Structures are given as C-alpha cells and as structure tokens.
Length: 246
Image (cartoon, rainbow, N blue to C red; front, side, top):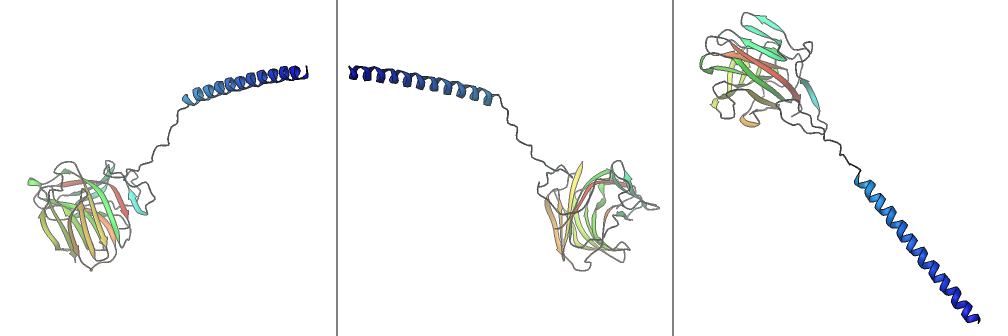
C-alpha cells in the first residue's frame, strides 16, 4: 500500500517536472523570438570617416598634421601682400590669390608675410589668361628675401618646368627648363615645392619633375609669382596654399 502511494507521488512529481520543463522551453522560445525580432529592427550606423580635402581635391590623411599655414583666401585680411604697380598686380580676387604680370620678362609676385625655414608648400594654380603660345612662367617661391631673392619653382603653360635661384634680383638656373608631361595644359595644376635643408624638390600634380641642391638661402618668406616671356598679360589664380614641415 505504501509502495502504491509512493508510486503515485512519484508519478505526480514527474508530471509536474515535465510540465515545468515544457513551460520553461515555451518561455525561452518566446523570449528568444522577441529578442530576435527586436534586434532585427535595430539599424547600426557606423560613424563616417572624417576626410579633410583642403586642396586640389586630394584627400589628406585623417591623422593630425602639423600645418604651419593654410589659406584658401576666403578672408581678404589673412595677411598676403596686396600690390599694384607698373608691372602688374597681386592680391585677393575671385576666392583666390590673383597674380597678374603685364610687362614682358618682368616678374610679379606676392608674399605671405611669414618666415619659414624647412618647409613643403602646396598650392593650386589656374592660368586665366596668358601670352602668345603659352610662353610664360609661374609658380611658388620659398626662402624669399626682403629684396625678392630666393628660390623659384616654375612651370609654363606650354609644358616646361624649372627651378631658379634669384640673386640680386637676377635669375640663376638651378634646373634648366625641361619639358614635362606632368603639367595639365588646361585647368588646375597642383604644385609642390619642398625646401628641406639644401635640397630643393619640385612636384607637379604629385609627380616629381626636378630636384637640386643649393645652400645659398636657409630661411625666408613664401611667394606666388608669374611672368610673361612675351608681350601681353598673364593672370594666374592661386588657391589652397598649404605649408607644412617636409
């Protein structure tokens, strides 16, 4: 009799345990289904990568870079030289820095009013008007002295490049004019001048076109310049000047 009662009790316990397990399975399944549904509705959006494009449409690294100077010429009070004389003009215009030379073989330039030593200069240059057959020269200068002496990195509208040194306002060729297919005959040309110690390196649109060593000048201003080598006027609009350590 006792065994029968015990058997009944055990049977009842088994039933309850079975029911409990089934209930737990049901609850677990419902919760899992609900979580899956909710998670499926969640849209995860990654933060966009910040890309700085300050010049030439070329993406700069996102890491911190030690810029010494950047100017897009949106502020006409940013400190660049404003000049007007018999040989031409230099100053802020049309959202850039315009250099115009009107006298054959007479350079026109404008300086930033800064002093640098070892630097890399990047700038976008667009020729708006030039002399016959593109017989001109324009570009960027480093280590410019008070009288205009310094180093000049030049390209021409007809596809040539050079590096010059100016001594007592006279041009001395460090790299004679050489033809280069790196130059865009129309549109924007991106110029890079590196003045690092006694080494001078010139890149056009990211392609190295000339390199030379000279130790005449160790520091000075920077300038944007242009000259017509035939009768007429040359107008060059410069933009997005970036100066950094080489």
